[in-house]
Length: 345
Image 1: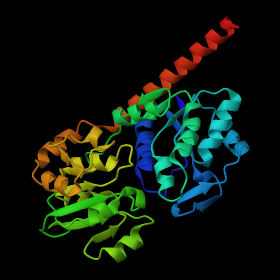
Image 2: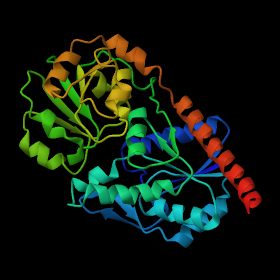
Image 3: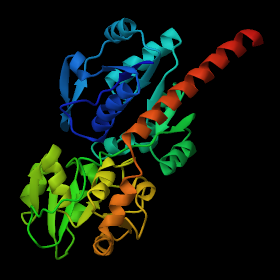
Image 4: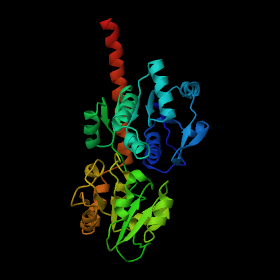
C-alpha cells in the first residue's frame, strides 16, 4: 500500500507520538509498504504558546492537497488534531476519501491545564475532528471504553511496541548506589511530576527529559537529579540505573515509557488510570495505587526479570500489522458503503 500519514508532531520533538510513527515507518517498510509523511517540516512554523517545543504549521489546504495528490496514496491516516491534521481532514471530506485518525493525546485535558476553557467544549471540538473519519485508532481498551462513552465512534484497537534490543537490563548505576526512582518523559505540567517530587522517600529522584516545566522544577526541587533529554544508549543506561520507574501522569493515553522501563527490567509505580492499568500488571510488573508513595515502595520489591519478560510480549512489528489491518478494514467498509448508497438511491 501507499500510505500517507499527516502529523503535526514530528522531529525535533521528542515524545511518544513521534517515536511511535518513526518506528511504525520502519516496520511498514519492512512489510513492503510505501510511506509518506506530511509534517511541520513541509511548512513555515511558529512556536506554540506556552509550549515552544511544539511548532504550529501554517498548513494551507491547497498545499496539503498538492502533497496528497502528488503521492497518490491508497490510504490516508491523520495522526494529530493540529493545523496539518485539520487541513488533511478537509481534503479527505472534500474529495470523498476515507481516512483514519488516532487518539494519541488527551488534548482537552492538556488545554485546560493552561487555559480556562470548559472540558465539555474541547471534547466536542475533538470529537467532531475524529468522528468525521472512518476509524479512530486507540492504544488501550480502557481509553476505547472512555471515548465511546463520550460519543466517539468507529474505535479500533492499535497496540504499541518497544525496542527490546535497545532497552534491556544493564549492570550500571549512573545515579549512585542508593535506591533510584526515575521518571522519563516530557517535563510539562500535565505530567503531574510535582506529586512525585514532593514525596518524602529515602530514594534518589531522577527526572530524564526536557519541557516547559523544567526550569521551574529545577529551581524548586534542588535535591532531584535533572539530566535533560537523553537518547539512544544514554537513555537506555538511565532506565537501567533505576530501581523503580515512576509514572505520575493521569492524562496519558498509553505511555511507551512504561514498556521501555519494563524492558529494562524496572518495575513501574503509577496511579490506576488509563495507560498504566492497560500495560502494567499490578503486583507483578508494577504497583498501581492512588497513593503514589505506596506504589513506589511496593514496586521496589518486585522481580525485575518478570518485568522484562512481560515487555517482550510487545513488538513494533505487531504494531505495524495491526495498523495495516485497521486501514484495510476501513477501506473495505468504505467500499461497501459506496455499493449500498447507489442501490438505495
